[in-house]
Amino acid sequence: MARSRYTISEARAPHFLTCTVVNWLPLFSNPALVEILLDSWRFLHDQGRLTLYAYVIMENHLHLVGAAENLGKEIGDFKSFTARKMIDRLRERKADWILQQLALYKAGFKTDRQYQLWQEGAHPQQIQDETMMRQKVEYIHNNPVKRGYVDDPLHWRYSSARNYAGLPGLVEVCRVW
Image 1 (cartoon, rainbow, N blue to C red):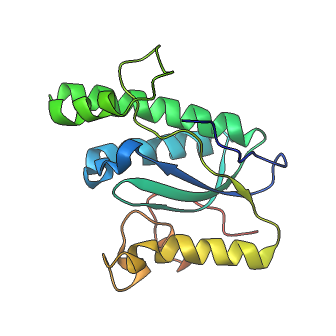
Image 2 (image 1 turned 45 degrees about the horizontal axis):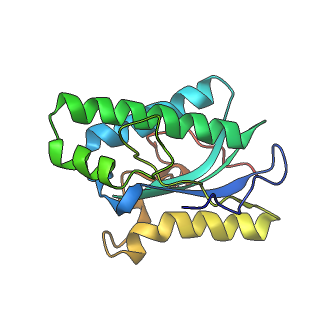
């Protein structure tokens, strides 16, 4: 698969990103694997490496709006770290079928590893203005509604919709744009 034509265009500017599991495998229906994602975001936030504005985690992909001094590097580190931790967890749990799928759908050029968890790229789109930010945040929060999983975005546990409603969320987000 060719590398994405999308690039991080301006340092520190918020970008809308999508990270997808290879072959759209529904790994994030497992709360233990989702916790790895959340812990990684918490760490990046606590270290001052990532400002997270909005997010949603679906069963096989996630969307976020984030900013960092070097967003491409931070997202790369996020994907690398979470893939290693999730694969370790799947090995511990002897989730052989899933591991076989991650091996089967690994890109041929990735000869330095046995498995591939994330698809290449994150399709970053720079947020141009407040209107675009609002549109992306609404899109993120309404993703589970659109998929028919919940009737109200506040009912989706793995989303920043609760943060935006002034309720406790699972990860701290910046609501000041």
